Length: 292
Image 1: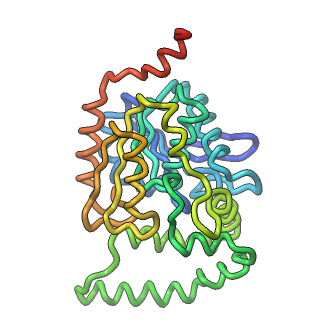
Image 2: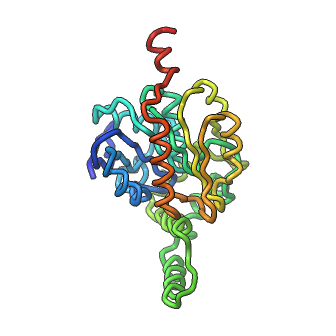
Image 3: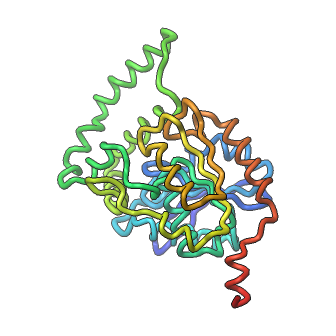
């Protein structure tokens, strides 16, 4: 892990491998470890950059702006510090929204996008996330993630595992671990600030689809779990309408973390997507550069 100081705050990030650059952006309450299977495989052929967004993981958790624009600007600052001119962006959940916002604000940085169970494609979202935006939720959350209560649940799950009974999928296990991280006060504050910047009581308040018309040549792929209970599969229909040339991959039996539920399949479709779009120019950027 490396550290970049951004406006006085420490941003921790993984930088491994060599070759074309792939930026992996985790979701809300996530960190670079959410991409562990992909980092191991992709770093054999690519230079992989995987930050812990501010407010997440090992990065600082300051009081401040946690909007998707602020996160996109931080990713831009990171790439600039590494002298990276452009990259393939892979974003999960909130990270997908950040990837799309980066395309909107800094289009020259984004060669292509892979959106994994992405936010920003429709209003529907888990009731738990909607509830977290309500006034007073900051008083309730500490009780919901009480260490003793979580310990009882963890022991129960461990007992089921020892008995050979079905336990949580990788998606559910990752979501459970992520939820537990808000026991930390700084993480909880950052979570609430981030959630409230993109979610209201009636659902997601930020939508990227109206802006896709400005980027008709962007190569994009959507990857979704059929059993996603956080952001519904139906959001792929919204993107299909605006990205008619985009590729959509639906993983049966997968949840909100399809890249963890089925890492081998994710790697295969990612490599296929990269091969299909290799050497594909961005005519919209070419036109902008030439004044056409």
